[in-house]
Structure formats: C-alpha cells, structure tokens
Image 1 (cartoon, rainbow, N blue to C red):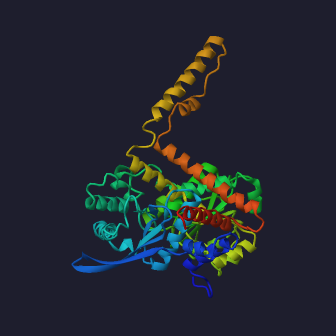
Image 2 (cartoon, rainbow, N blue to C red):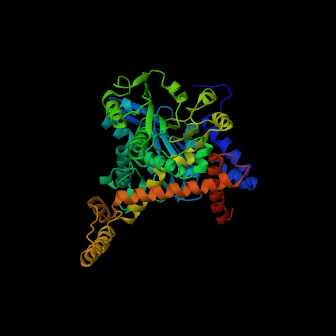
Image 3 (cartoon, one colour):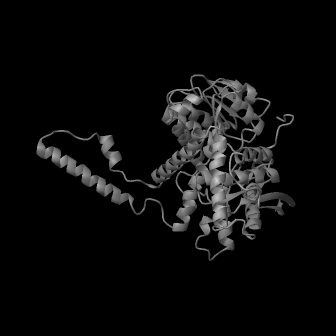
Length: 476
C-alpha cells in the first residue's frame, strides 16, 4: 500500500539512523562515513534460455568494510532495486555490530521471479550471476560472503559455492565463500531454522525481564500468549512452530500472500505448513476462518505480532489500527519510520529487526568459522563430554549402592546427561547466548538513559558505537 508522505525503505533506515546519532557524540565526518553506502555494483547479464537470450539485472552492495569479510544475503525477487539492496546492506552492518559477528554489511539481489523458471534454468541464471560477482571478488571467503534471503535457500547457495570452487581451484577455504549451504555441501546443522529460532530466543530473553514485559502492558511468560504471524515462509514458519510447540504460545492467525487463517484457540502450525506446501497458500485450510484480505488481520487483537515477510507492511496507513502491544520484527524493515513513530506514541514495544532477525547471520558466522577450521563442531569434544558424565553417574550410583541409599536416576535424565553436545546443540547454544547478550546490551541503553525511549534507538546506538570504535582504531 502506498501512503502519502510515507518514507521509503531506504529513507526509513536513514531516519532511524539519524534519530540514534542525535543522541550520540560523533564527529560529523565519522557520522557520514558510517551512514553512507561504500559501493554498489550493478550487473546486467544474458543467459540463453528457451531458445533466446534473456537479460537479467542484479546488484551487490557493500555498505561498510570496517570489518571484513562483509556479510549479507542474496534475494531473488522482482521487487529488488538498488535502493532496497543498499538499505538492506546498511541494516546488515548494524545487525552484525549489534550481535558481535565480525563482519561488515553487504547485500545482494537479482530481479527475478524464481517461480518463472524451472530448476535447471534457475541454476544457469544463479551460476552466471555468481560468476559475475566472483570475478570481481564480490563473493570471496575473506572479502564478501553471501547467504540466503527471500527467494533463495540451500540449493542456490550450493550452486554459488560450487561455481566459486570451479573458478578458484586452489582455494582451500572455497566452501567459506557463502553460508546457508546444505550440511552435505559444507553447511551447518541449524542454519535453516536459525532466523526463526533467533526470534524465539529473542522473545524468551524479553520475557525474562518483568519490567520490560510490563512496558508492553503484558505479564507472565510466553505460555498462552496470542501471536499473529505475518509471512509463513522459512522464518515465520519456524518462529511459529517453536513458540507454539516449545513455549506454549497460541498462534491465533497466520497471514500469507493469498489471505489469512484465524483461530482464537490456536492453529496447528505443522498442519498449516503441510497444507501450504500442497496447495500453495492457506486458502481452503479446514478448521479455521479464512480472511481473504490478509492485511486486515494485522489489526486483530493479539499479544504479540510477528511480521516475518516483506519490508513496509506496517505503515502510516495501518499503524494506528494495530492492537498488538508487542511487535517483534522477524523481517527486515517491516515497520516504516512513520509507522514506528505512531506505534511508539501508542506505547507499543517493538523488538527491532536489527536484533530480532539476527539469528540467520549469527549461525552463518558459525558456518563460516566451521568452513575455515575444516572440522565439524563437536567432533573433538563430544565423546569426551560423554565419558566424563558417565564417570560421574557411575560413581554416584556406586556410592548409592555402597551406602544402601536405594535411589536411582530417572532414565530420561540419565540419557540426557550422558549425551554430549553435537553440532546442532552447540549451534543452538551459541545462538541463545548471542541473542541474550545482544538484548542485554540494548536493554542497558534503553533502561539506563532517559532520552532513549525505545529498543530500536538503543539497538542503533549500540551498533553505531561499535562501528565507530572500529573506524577510530583504524585511524579515522
């Protein structure tokens, strides 16, 4: 929806940046250096498909090289533009700084509808786009490391990694040129679920602080909380699945491209997912109310709203009608600057995209480290952990028998205690720690400075300050 005087995505990011730096002590020169996008490469290439040459346009933007490599996904969508890619690259800079992954910010995009092409054709297009970026070092393990985004996934990342390896046959670290690969191609367990899992961990950390929860006019924990999820792709699906199955939340509505499903008793997330995979949308799903105009469901009563699809879904035209007291941004830029102002004045607490959807880049960091170290996480220590745990259990059981205490350990406890940490367990542990630590750094500013009224501003302050310190250490 286009709303009069509504700032665009890139302008919204810039305005949010400006709101934060007004509260910081930065020199004008350093502020401008952090603000601007360093470079954007535009490529137009041809691929022979269906008997003729098709021309495609793609972008790779580098916002900040205060740390290298730079990191950021590649999206395939018809909406891709230079402004969008540069805004997303800026968000990546701040996001990486906030969660302390040692990357600068980058982003890429290809103007294409993946559904228009079959798998073989899409592979040809992806490999040619990758070729154009690789030969300019815009895909490189030490300089620029892409990942999946909207319209791309493990398959596309595997094609890109293979294309890089073909062009750099002596690079021992070739697999580290891209993250989000399937596990059998050098990926890491837990990457597909990472952004959705990060949303869950972010909410868990928020609900560990009763004072913060009360700011959102809520109480208690996640159990029983009514949640509306907008966007049921990879991120929205995993967030909904984990929050409902593991935390007892009720997913009362799911909004998709063809409408929305509503059930105040809570939807079965897995059943909805299987229906969407078969039917291509939510329409016709049995046992729930279907709402054709899905965007209206953003305004329904709930405790938590999770926008998990595109940017700009919350705007000046609907922000005043949104009833959710807590919004967690699982997508990039789902709230425009104008909507953010309206929602904040209403007292709505927003857990910002800068933090909430950082699970993907965090686990991508783990994958990059795994590729550079050439060893699976847990391989060295898992059995040693199990051996030490077994020694302790056996000694406790021996002491019980010798002293005639007669107690035994519950089977499920014993099995869990004796199981060492595999790669997935270590990835989830590292992600949980990252989300907790990042929230606490935001919270320290939010609760400690009267002039900082919201989590988004505090997130920007933390991130910009870390980028500024890195630039200062380089002599700028």
